[in-house]
Length: 196
Ligand SMILES: [Zn+2]
Image (cartoon, rainbow, N blue to C red; front, side, top):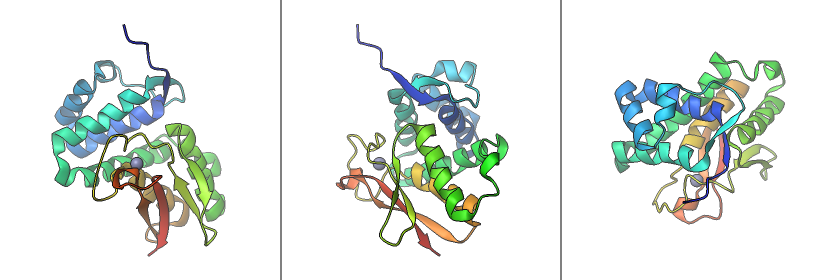
């Protein structure tokens, strides 16, 4: 028997992916993806928006892998990006998990958002880049494990960072970009904001 993998993934991140998959691809596709990812239990009773860690990294990864299988290479980056954006939006706007920092100045607010992201997904870190702005360094990105791609692959994080930027600085101020990605051979997956 194989050893049981440690549960390191929060309910909140699985639930946000679950809800956004339904919005973006519809209920049937969402259920197919969850079933193929081995997450029948989440279809029957979706996890609450809590910080409890009841899922494994492998399970979370499977959601994205199964979505990629269903959609195919051509459209998947756009879908990942939408899932990342909507997941963050649902968590923050609908479930108000960051309401306590709503009124902070934009730079501080964005930093707090990135810290929130690292706790919610249980990986990555906030880094300051040359011009002093904050970026998200997903050095332990598992989404890109075993993936080879000619363009940045783990675009769910680009979508999430885009939402966090819009929420902190206002829509249209910055565009989130994945400037490095392990899947294209870089040493890390790095996300930065570019002035529009
Ligand atoms: Zn990656």
